[in-house]
Image 1 (cartoon, rainbow, N blue to C red):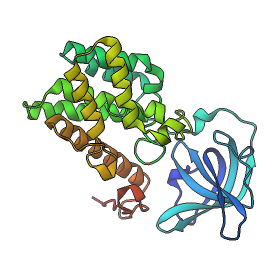
Image 2 (cartoon, rainbow, N blue to C red):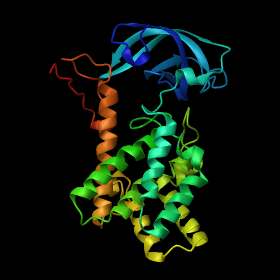
Image 3 (spheres, rainbow, N blue to C red):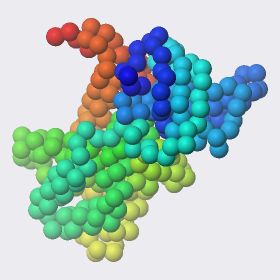
Length: 306
Protein backbone atom coordinates (compact mmCIF):
# COMPACT_ATOMS: atom_id res chain seq x y z
CA UNK A 1 0.00 0.00 0.00
CA UNK A 2 1.34 3.42 -0.96
CA UNK A 3 1.82 6.07 1.68
CA UNK A 4 0.56 9.64 1.41
CA UNK A 5 3.82 10.94 -0.01
CA UNK A 6 3.88 8.25 -2.70
CA UNK A 7 0.41 8.89 -4.13
CA UNK A 8 0.13 10.51 -7.56
CA UNK A 9 -2.63 12.73 -8.93
CA UNK A 10 -5.72 10.63 -9.61
CA UNK A 11 -4.83 7.86 -7.18
CA UNK A 12 -6.94 6.93 -4.17
CA UNK A 13 -6.10 7.18 -0.50
CA UNK A 14 -7.89 4.56 1.61
CA UNK A 15 -6.06 3.90 4.87
CA UNK A 16 -5.30 4.90 8.44
CA UNK A 17 -3.58 8.27 8.88
CA UNK A 18 -3.02 10.82 11.63
CA UNK A 19 -4.50 14.30 11.82
CA UNK A 20 -1.42 16.52 12.11
CA UNK A 21 -3.21 19.87 12.00
CA UNK A 22 -6.83 21.04 12.08
CA UNK A 23 -7.93 24.61 11.40
CA UNK A 24 -11.37 26.22 11.31
CA UNK A 25 -12.53 28.30 8.36
CA UNK A 26 -15.60 30.03 6.96
CA UNK A 27 -16.53 29.47 3.31
CA UNK A 28 -17.73 32.20 0.96
CA UNK A 29 -21.32 31.02 1.55
CA UNK A 30 -20.88 31.59 5.30
CA UNK A 31 -20.75 27.90 6.19
CA UNK A 32 -17.98 26.47 8.41
CA UNK A 33 -15.31 24.05 7.27
CA UNK A 34 -12.16 22.40 8.58
CA UNK A 35 -8.77 22.25 6.89
CA UNK A 36 -7.04 19.04 7.94
CA UNK A 37 -3.43 18.03 7.35
CA UNK A 38 -3.35 14.24 7.22
CA UNK A 39 0.00 12.53 7.75
CA UNK A 40 1.83 9.22 7.78
CA UNK A 41 5.51 8.26 7.73
CA UNK A 42 5.85 9.09 4.01
CA UNK A 43 4.37 12.59 3.97
CA UNK A 44 1.26 14.68 4.45
CA UNK A 45 -1.64 16.05 2.45
CA UNK A 46 -4.23 18.78 2.94
CA UNK A 47 -7.96 18.13 2.75
CA UNK A 48 -11.18 20.02 3.47
CA UNK A 49 -14.17 18.93 5.54
CA UNK A 50 -17.19 21.01 4.60
CA UNK A 51 -20.09 22.05 6.83
CA UNK A 52 -18.33 21.28 10.09
CA UNK A 53 -16.14 23.04 12.64
CA UNK A 54 -15.90 20.20 15.16
CA UNK A 55 -12.29 20.47 16.32
CA UNK A 56 -13.00 18.23 19.32
CA UNK A 57 -13.93 15.33 17.06
CA UNK A 58 -11.20 15.95 14.46
CA UNK A 59 -8.29 17.06 16.64
CA UNK A 60 -4.53 16.81 16.05
CA UNK A 61 -2.99 13.44 17.01
CA UNK A 62 -6.29 11.62 16.35
CA UNK A 63 -5.96 8.55 14.13
CA UNK A 64 -8.58 8.30 11.38
CA UNK A 65 -9.42 6.11 8.45
CA UNK A 66 -9.60 8.43 5.45
CA UNK A 67 -10.63 7.76 1.87
CA UNK A 68 -10.54 10.06 -1.11
CA UNK A 69 -8.92 11.00 -4.40
CA UNK A 70 -5.63 12.88 -4.75
CA UNK A 71 -6.24 16.00 -6.84
CA UNK A 72 -4.17 18.85 -8.24
CA UNK A 73 -5.06 22.24 -6.77
CA UNK A 74 -3.03 25.13 -8.16
CA UNK A 75 0.08 23.02 -8.55
CA UNK A 76 -0.17 21.28 -5.19
CA UNK A 77 -1.71 17.95 -4.21
CA UNK A 78 -4.90 18.00 -2.20
CA UNK A 79 -7.19 15.19 -1.08
CA UNK A 80 -10.81 15.27 -2.20
CA UNK A 81 -12.20 13.64 0.90
CA UNK A 82 -14.98 11.10 0.47
CA UNK A 83 -15.03 9.42 3.89
CA UNK A 84 -13.35 9.85 7.27
CA UNK A 85 -13.81 7.85 10.48
CA UNK A 86 -12.16 8.55 13.82
CA UNK A 87 -10.54 5.41 15.23
CA UNK A 88 -9.89 4.27 18.78
CA UNK A 89 -6.11 4.25 18.37
CA UNK A 90 -3.48 6.28 20.18
CA UNK A 91 -0.11 5.06 18.86
CA UNK A 92 0.97 8.13 16.87
CA UNK A 93 4.54 6.82 16.39
CA UNK A 94 3.33 4.74 13.44
CA UNK A 95 2.25 7.89 11.59
CA UNK A 96 4.96 10.50 12.17
CA UNK A 97 7.90 11.41 10.00
CA UNK A 98 11.23 11.54 11.79
CA UNK A 99 14.84 12.43 11.07
CA UNK A 100 16.68 9.96 8.81
CA UNK A 101 19.22 9.28 11.58
CA UNK A 102 18.48 7.67 14.97
CA UNK A 103 18.05 10.19 17.78
CA UNK A 104 20.91 8.61 19.75
CA UNK A 105 23.32 9.15 16.84
CA UNK A 106 22.26 12.78 16.45
CA UNK A 107 22.76 13.36 20.19
CA UNK A 108 26.23 11.81 20.16
CA UNK A 109 27.43 13.78 17.14
CA UNK A 110 26.00 17.13 18.25
CA UNK A 111 27.49 16.74 21.74
CA UNK A 112 30.81 15.83 20.13
CA UNK A 113 30.83 19.11 18.21
CA UNK A 114 30.02 21.02 21.41
CA UNK A 115 32.94 19.33 23.18
CA UNK A 116 35.23 20.43 20.34
CA UNK A 117 34.66 24.12 21.18
CA UNK A 118 37.96 25.40 22.60
CA UNK A 119 36.74 28.66 24.14
CA UNK A 120 35.91 27.69 27.75
CA UNK A 121 33.10 30.18 28.43
CA UNK A 122 31.49 29.62 25.05
CA UNK A 123 31.50 25.85 25.55
CA UNK A 124 30.13 26.26 29.09
CA UNK A 125 27.21 28.36 27.86
CA UNK A 126 26.31 26.17 24.87
CA UNK A 127 26.59 22.94 26.84
CA UNK A 128 24.48 24.31 29.69
CA UNK A 129 21.66 25.35 27.36
CA UNK A 130 21.53 22.06 25.45
CA UNK A 131 21.64 19.92 28.61
CA UNK A 132 18.99 22.12 30.28
CA UNK A 133 16.39 21.31 27.61
CA UNK A 134 17.95 18.10 26.35
CA UNK A 135 14.82 16.11 25.49
CA UNK A 136 13.03 18.99 23.76
CA UNK A 137 16.16 19.98 21.81
CA UNK A 138 16.56 16.48 20.38
CA UNK A 139 12.89 15.76 19.61
CA UNK A 140 11.36 19.05 18.38
CA UNK A 141 10.95 19.82 14.70
CA UNK A 142 12.53 22.93 13.20
CA UNK A 143 9.23 24.15 11.73
CA UNK A 144 5.49 23.52 11.53
CA UNK A 145 5.87 22.88 7.81
CA UNK A 146 8.51 23.30 5.10
CA UNK A 147 12.07 22.57 6.24
CA UNK A 148 12.82 19.90 8.86
CA UNK A 149 9.16 19.76 9.93
CA UNK A 150 9.50 16.30 11.43
CA UNK A 151 10.35 14.59 14.71
CA UNK A 152 13.96 15.44 15.73
CA UNK A 153 14.08 17.85 12.80
CA UNK A 154 15.65 20.65 14.85
CA UNK A 155 18.66 18.64 16.01
CA UNK A 156 19.07 16.93 12.62
CA UNK A 157 19.11 20.38 10.97
CA UNK A 158 21.73 21.49 13.51
CA UNK A 159 23.87 18.40 12.88
CA UNK A 160 23.79 18.90 9.10
CA UNK A 161 24.81 22.54 9.59
CA UNK A 162 27.58 21.57 12.00
CA UNK A 163 29.10 19.27 9.39
CA UNK A 164 28.98 22.07 6.83
CA UNK A 165 30.41 24.59 9.30
CA UNK A 166 33.27 22.29 10.21
CA UNK A 167 34.34 21.86 6.60
CA UNK A 168 33.94 25.55 5.78
CA UNK A 169 36.05 26.50 8.80
CA UNK A 170 38.82 24.21 7.48
CA UNK A 171 38.64 25.86 4.06
CA UNK A 172 38.58 29.41 5.46
CA UNK A 173 40.89 29.51 8.50
CA UNK A 174 40.11 33.20 9.13
CA UNK A 175 36.75 32.05 10.53
CA UNK A 176 36.44 31.62 14.29
CA UNK A 177 35.38 27.96 14.36
CA UNK A 178 34.28 28.07 18.01
CA UNK A 179 31.95 30.98 17.33
CA UNK A 180 30.52 29.37 14.20
CA UNK A 181 29.90 26.02 15.92
CA UNK A 182 28.25 27.75 18.90
CA UNK A 183 26.08 29.84 16.58
CA UNK A 184 24.88 26.76 14.71
CA UNK A 185 23.94 24.93 17.91
CA UNK A 186 22.04 27.94 19.32
CA UNK A 187 20.54 29.67 16.26
CA UNK A 188 17.20 27.77 16.35
CA UNK A 189 17.36 26.66 19.99
CA UNK A 190 14.25 28.67 20.96
CA UNK A 191 12.14 26.67 18.48
CA UNK A 192 11.51 24.50 21.55
CA UNK A 193 9.56 27.46 22.96
CA UNK A 194 8.16 28.70 19.66
CA UNK A 195 6.57 25.34 18.77
CA UNK A 196 4.21 23.39 21.00
CA UNK A 197 5.42 19.78 20.72
CA UNK A 198 7.41 17.32 18.59
CA UNK A 199 4.51 15.39 17.02
CA UNK A 200 1.80 17.87 15.99
CA UNK A 201 3.56 21.23 16.34
CA UNK A 202 1.68 24.49 16.42
CA UNK A 203 2.92 27.96 17.26
CA UNK A 204 2.72 28.79 20.95
CA UNK A 205 1.59 32.23 22.10
CA UNK A 206 5.21 33.35 22.72
CA UNK A 207 6.08 31.79 19.36
CA UNK A 208 3.48 33.91 17.58
CA UNK A 209 3.97 37.16 19.50
CA UNK A 210 7.73 37.11 20.13
CA UNK A 211 9.31 34.49 17.84
CA UNK A 212 12.28 32.19 18.29
CA UNK A 213 14.91 34.81 17.48
CA UNK A 214 13.84 37.26 20.19
CA UNK A 215 13.15 34.42 22.62
CA UNK A 216 16.70 33.16 22.13
CA UNK A 217 18.28 36.56 22.65
CA UNK A 218 16.43 36.87 25.96
CA UNK A 219 17.46 33.32 26.94
CA UNK A 220 21.11 34.12 26.25
CA UNK A 221 20.87 37.27 28.36
CA UNK A 222 19.35 35.36 31.27
CA UNK A 223 21.62 32.30 31.23
CA UNK A 224 24.67 34.39 30.41
CA UNK A 225 24.11 36.43 33.58
CA UNK A 226 23.59 33.27 35.65
CA UNK A 227 26.84 31.75 34.40
CA UNK A 228 28.71 35.08 34.42
CA UNK A 229 29.66 34.81 30.77
CA UNK A 230 31.93 37.50 29.30
CA UNK A 231 29.91 40.39 27.83
CA UNK A 232 31.47 40.21 24.35
CA UNK A 233 30.88 36.46 24.10
CA UNK A 234 27.19 37.08 24.81
CA UNK A 235 26.98 39.99 22.39
CA UNK A 236 28.51 38.17 19.41
CA UNK A 237 26.37 35.08 20.03
CA UNK A 238 23.27 37.28 20.22
CA UNK A 239 24.30 38.86 16.92
CA UNK A 240 24.56 35.43 15.29
CA UNK A 241 21.02 34.61 16.45
CA UNK A 242 19.60 38.01 15.48
CA UNK A 243 21.10 37.92 11.97
CA UNK A 244 20.82 34.27 10.94
CA UNK A 245 17.84 34.87 8.63
CA UNK A 246 20.05 37.22 6.66
CA UNK A 247 17.63 40.03 5.75
CA UNK A 248 14.95 42.00 7.60
CA UNK A 249 12.26 40.84 5.15
CA UNK A 250 13.18 37.25 6.04
CA UNK A 251 12.90 37.86 9.79
CA UNK A 252 16.36 39.05 10.80
CA UNK A 253 16.54 41.90 13.29
CA UNK A 254 19.90 42.92 11.82
CA UNK A 255 21.98 41.94 8.79
CA UNK A 256 25.07 39.76 9.37
CA UNK A 257 28.03 41.94 10.36
CA UNK A 258 30.65 39.27 11.09
CA UNK A 259 32.16 36.58 8.88
CA UNK A 260 30.74 33.88 11.12
CA UNK A 261 27.26 35.46 10.98
CA UNK A 262 27.36 35.53 7.17
CA UNK A 263 28.40 31.89 6.98
CA UNK A 264 25.73 30.90 9.52
CA UNK A 265 23.06 32.57 7.40
CA UNK A 266 24.31 30.87 4.21
CA UNK A 267 24.53 27.34 5.59
CA UNK A 268 21.18 27.68 7.39
CA UNK A 269 19.55 28.71 4.11
CA UNK A 270 21.36 25.99 2.15
CA UNK A 271 20.39 23.17 4.51
CA UNK A 272 16.78 24.33 4.75
CA UNK A 273 16.35 24.62 0.97
CA UNK A 274 18.08 21.32 0.21
CA UNK A 275 15.86 19.53 2.73
CA UNK A 276 12.72 21.06 1.22
CA UNK A 277 13.80 20.04 -2.29
CA UNK A 278 14.69 16.52 -1.15
CA UNK A 279 11.26 16.09 0.43
CA UNK A 280 9.52 17.48 -2.66
CA UNK A 281 11.38 15.12 -4.98
CA UNK A 282 11.56 12.01 -2.77
CA UNK A 283 8.68 10.18 -4.48
CA UNK A 284 8.76 11.97 -7.84
CA UNK A 285 9.53 9.65 -10.77
CA UNK A 286 12.63 10.47 -12.89
CA UNK A 287 11.63 12.70 -15.80
CA UNK A 288 8.79 14.32 -13.83
CA UNK A 289 8.28 17.57 -11.91
CA UNK A 290 7.36 17.93 -8.25
CA UNK A 291 4.38 19.88 -7.00
CA UNK A 292 4.93 23.58 -6.40
CA UNK A 293 6.49 24.76 -3.15
CA UNK A 294 5.34 28.12 -1.81
CA UNK A 295 8.43 28.27 0.43
CA UNK A 296 10.70 27.87 -2.62
CA UNK A 297 9.30 30.81 -4.59
CA UNK A 298 6.29 28.75 -5.70
CA UNK A 299 8.53 26.68 -7.99
CA UNK A 300 8.25 23.04 -8.96
CA UNK A 301 11.44 21.01 -9.42
CA UNK A 302 12.50 18.50 -12.05
CA UNK A 303 14.03 15.12 -11.25
CA UNK A 304 16.42 14.19 -14.08
CA UNK A 305 16.50 10.72 -15.59
CA UNK A 306 20.29 10.69 -15.26
